[in-house]
Picture 1 (spheres, rainbow, N blue to C red):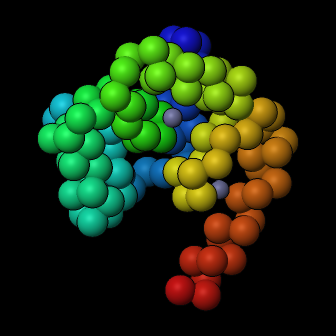
Picture 2: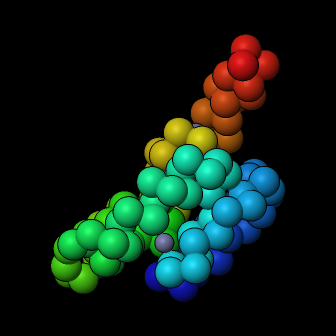
Picture 3: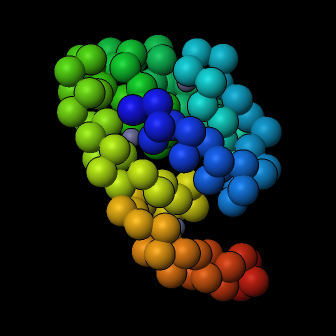
Length: 105
Ligand SMILES: [Zn+2]
Ligand SMILES: [Zn+2]
Ligand SMILES: [Zn+2]
């Protein structure tokens, strides 16, 4: 699990440098204030167990542990589209989609 985390942190540093809003409850960093505000709700509700990777919240620790298997098996998480990928090849392949999106916006 820690290896997975390291991978993800490297990935985040490289791909998503602009994550200025850091949650003080779970240290999750997000890009937009609106996303940050929405994320804060998870800590006030009945789902205190928050996935450090994608920010999904769960009512029970066991649910979170089960969920973490997805990230363990698909360690390349894309913040842009919230998808997880098994290999860096798959991850790289979908990256240009986001580049295009940015040009349009
Ligand atoms: Zn948080
Ligand atoms: Zn997750
Ligand atoms: Zn993506």
